[in-house]
Structure formats: C-alpha cells, structure tokens
Length: 390
Image (tube, rainbow, N blue to C red; front, top):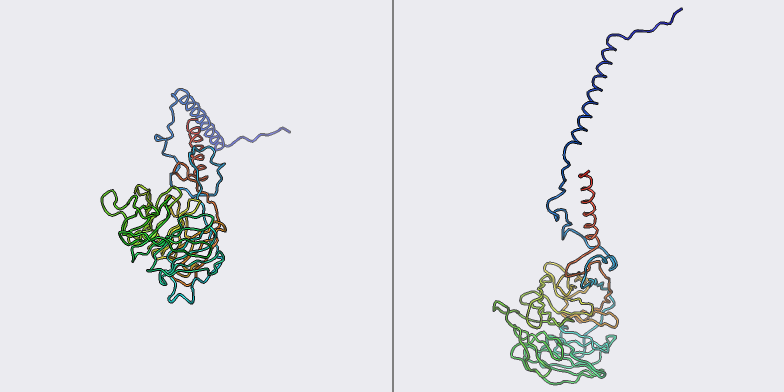
C-alpha cells in the first residue's frame, strides 16, 4: 500500500508566486535606498537661526523661595532680599486727655523717642502729648495753632529734641523732652505754610508751600528743591516727609496724590501713586518704605514698598485699623508699629519679618524657576541637535 501526496491546487500556487514577487521587490528597493544614502553628501542640520529664539522669556516666570547658595553660578555684584512684613494686632490704647481735649483727636504726627515713650501732635485739640512706653499719659502742652506733624531730630542720654510744624503761624516750634517733662524751645519762622518735616543729617528738611527746604537747626536755609527739569513745580503739597538710609527724601504729595522719592540734588528716583491720597511715610533699617493713606476704590490703608518704589504688599486694611491713618511710627526695640489718625484711640501691631524668594542681583530679579528654565532650554537644544544630525 503506497503513500499518497496531495497536489496543491492552481489557486494556491498562484498566491505563493505573488508573495514571492513582492518580497523580492521590497528587498531590491531597500538595497537601492541604502546605496543612495551612502552616496549622498551629509548636510549640516540647522536647529535654529537665531540663538535667542528658544531662550527663556525674560518676564514669564513666577518667583519661588530660594536660598543664596542656589545663585552660585549667577554673576552677582549686589544681592539684597525683599523682606515681607506681617502685621499682627497687639492692642488698642486711649489717646484722649479727658480734662483737656474738647474734640475728637486727630493725630497727624507721631514718633517714638529713644527711651520708648510716644510723642504725638493732636491737630483738633492743638496739643503736643507725651505717653509712656506702655501708653500711659505723662504730659501735654497746648500749642498756639493747629499742628500738622512732628519729627524727633536728635537724642542724648537725657532727652530728645522734637520739632513741630504749625502751618497757620508759618512756624516750626522746638521742644525738649526730658523724662515726663516737655520744655518749649526756639521758634523757627518759614516764608510759607510749613507742613512735612524730617531730620536730615545735622539739620532738618521741611515742606514749605510747594517746595522742600533743607535748613539747619537755627532756621538758616541751606538748599531748596522746587522745580523739575522742565521748569514746572516739582511738588504740589509736601505734607509728609521721611529720609531713607541713603539720604534720599520721601515726599508724600497729597495734592498730586503720589509719593515721590528724590535725591538731595532733586533727581527723581521713583513716583508711587497706588494708594489714593497718601499720608505719613516711614522707613526702617531693613530698607523698607511704608506709606499710609486710602487706596483708590479699595480699603487698604498701609503699603510696604522697596527702596525702588516697588510695592511689596498691603500690610493693613480698613477693617484692621477702623479709621484712615494719618501717622505711623515704629519702635525698633520690640518691633511695634503704632497707627494713629482721626480717632481717640491708637492701634498697635507687631511687624514680623518674612524673607521672600525675590533676590535683586544687578537690578534684575532672578529666581530659581527662571534659572531652571534656561538650563532646561539649553538641554533641549542639545538633544534636538543630536537627534536631527544623526
């Protein structure tokens, strides 16, 4: 009995021939493509024509908390950190002398003395008042006119010199404060209504009319800042003044509704107009500027700025204070901020320091996210170049 083999049908043989022909054609085509690639000259691949085309956008980044050690590969000449302040409510104190004050108080000038006492000038009741370190009443003096504001010029082991501006009399009155005693001193006459006043080196800087005058403690005029470069008046009403650590003058101009920072030669450093009608200004040892007033269409009443005039944050709002503050002062010893205004009471807050991630290096804000973005962009460029060339 023999073994039988089935013969493939005609259709099956036809399909096998077609598959073999397709396979031979694909092999031939792949060999031809390989020969063409070897014979063709290799061309350089240009990833981008402009080297800055894929650079990180200069302003498209968000600041993060970083340390100075993360900035080691960035060329830096000067580095200073923005210091955020957090105001924490500590107390409310009565500022009214019941047997002497006949109207609601309006405190337009306030300063802490070196011994921790608080001295204020009450415009509505025409008085200069002295309060102890724990805000107990010590003494007061009735003034010949309504005071505008005051400043503490110098101090020694025994007492302090206080200067009060009285616009209606065109007079700056000097007082010497020793313990719980207020002793009247000389009177300095001005050629116009005198408003803001601040200590400047061995003398004073005073807002008189629409100009700012530098005078000595005897009243002699040393320099006047009045006109801008184009010949117009530089200031409208310099109602409040303060001096920064580098001797620039902070002018709170209520008429022009802005705060202007000028050098002693009159060069304008910045102009800040985000707080509506500004009132008193203040600086601290950490290069911060504080401005109180009422913000346009909002309820913020105290702003914190850098020395460049950049707003850091709003420290206090109307619901924290309860009135529009006219005067602020700071006691470095216990980090206490006193806020005064049209009220029989003052409120105190403790300023706590919180360092931000912003770092000023060569006048440019640099942070970790921007550095990381630039590094990532360079890495992507190199990877893409290697992929396209190969």
